[in-house]
Image (tube, rainbow, N blue to C red):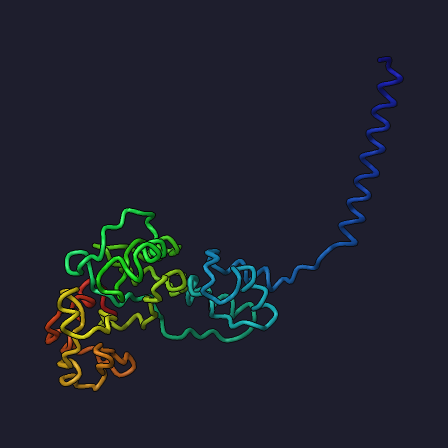
Length: 273
């Protein structure tokens, strides 16, 4: 190849580069989508967990909704009050956070107290265990299966399986609801963080049946209901239920419960200041 051919090739490549560059610049101008500055600023304030706890499809969806005035500024449960304050400042509104909520698993049926229904050696998946043997891998059909669907769904390391039952680290929990959504038993509920007296069972079998299948199941004896000074406990369908809005957390129910259910729920948890 002679020198003239090289110059021609360089000229052609240069011309092609110029043409393509002009085409890209033109396309960028034609198809340019204006970015909402507020949306971008709100997105920067979020935790980036994409947990869905805000009720929108990820952080981008929530930021867009906030910027357009379709979502509150305090819905990022992962970001908490700090993120809410920053977002409120961007949007020019006041920030207000409701009472902190956390996940709770109302089951005390650990492996050493709950009678197993069968030996399950399949996939470590709660749904799979239910399909294999019915409603539960324990004789109590209301019990936590304990194979970790909730722990895998939690992005904040707040859920752990302890002795066959899911337990919540309340200081890490942001109440995003991911654990609740994946639980096939629909067992997990949201409770106030400050609440330290918690319902420790969901079994609705008769007391005589419960005694045979779980040493930590509620037998509906009604002792807690009779002696609660705040009238915060009612026994319905053989199960003691706590009205958290009435509970004064005196701890009397935990002390007198013959099954130790309420006390068992109090001990692993850090009491609110």
